[in-house]
Image (cartoon, rainbow, N blue to C red; front, side, top):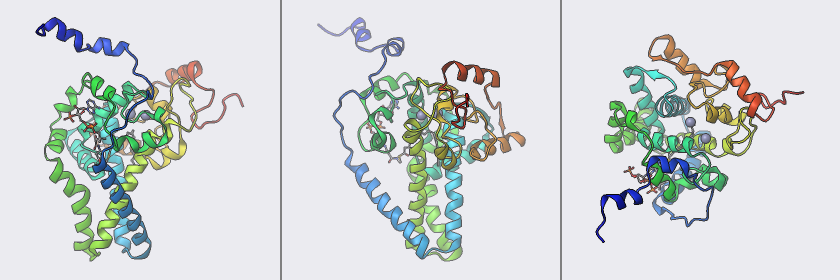
Length: 327
Ligand code: ST9
Ligand code: ZN
Ligand code: ZN
């Protein structure tokens, strides 16, 4: 019998149907290994370790300082850009700030921001299930880096079709980054950070290249810890029924992104934490600075009484620093 439109409708589940069916958590699956990624990640890690060795034994101070600045800029390009602005729309940014954040985000090369946002919106909608690209119920290694070494679970691809990405596909700054991904990311993340130390202060190619890779791999692993450690080890002051946790160590090294129990309860809060203005939340300070000069606006937060009531109702009895409230 030839297919007709009624049959096609039966085969293609609607968004409403998808929403009703909860994806399984870590159902048995066959991993399809992507050997290209094993090789590139393998090389990247060996080169980064050599970069660390050269940083200690051979690099100019200017090269070390330069890479540290790039590390900070790249991190904020992920936290304030891809994460808080583009994925969660937790604040709005004028065009000059969007361009600055896009360049900083390119420095971090975590795929294009468009693909990053798509995966991260899936992560929030289907947290810790097979439709979450880095499903932490599959353990530390999978949620940290393993998910980038295998083909994605079918649940991600199937349900991902229904994620609303219209705002992102319409964003000219992000379309530019995607359209020119190869030359643009190649230049901003690798080429310029290698050439600048050689040209301006006479660093060797060997040191400049390997320190560039060390900085890049550090940025990656710190980001990965939000997907792994901040879904596995910590406390849950806001909702004890979900897997994401508050992890202070991750917050400190990931520029304020380790208050992850809070973030999964209130993803639209631009601070990603109950208290934004503290030393662990450099990304919030960055956004606050641009709000002062008018380039960032409509910063969203959650009223304190709502946070307190929710913590009282569903939290595990700790405060935002992990201390038991009844002590
Ligand atoms: C990298 C990733 O950078 C980093 C992400 C980190 C995320 C962290 C989040 C943390 C929270 C925030 C905290 C920030 C803290 C920052 C602190 C900083 C110090 N929805 O992907 P493909 C479909 S890795 C809908 O190839 P495969 C779609 O049709 C480094 N649909 O899947 C797509 O086609 P198209 C650099 C989806 O083939 C098609 O599937 N990057 C979705 O299974 C194919 O997509 C690399 O090395 C979705 N979510 O391959 C590359 N996903 O795109 C690594 C897929 O045309 N990645 N579809 O629409 C890969 O090689 C591949 O993605 C793969 C899977 C092998 C992992
Ligand atoms: Zn998460
Ligand atoms: Zn998020």
